[in-house]
Length: 151
Image (cartoon, rainbow, N blue to C red; front, top):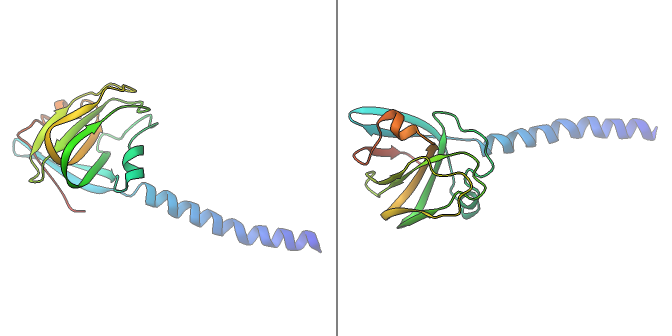
């Protein structure tokens, strides 16, 4: 009889655990569209948003790949000098430092994986967008482009 109750309890618990696991996984990979308009062409990326300090500390660390249209957005509460490093980041990234008006302050292309050297904006920025290394050059994105998103 005890074995029947144990089996019943496990049968009921498994779907609940699976649902909660799926829900947390879905929340982790939720994305928003970010548009970069360069030379009259709009490029749309579906990016994760690092909103909390913990999410911003983690960033794209330990990822072994990034979709061509993927990335991560780091919005700041108020404009500041942006400074990032590549510790535990295994893939090269393009870091786009974005001013409050959506203009681009600086693009750091193909940052070096696992480097401890700071990658710093040129001035105060409101956000940083990380894309797969080489994306800016491939799409002709430079400091004349505009970046927009709705959060």
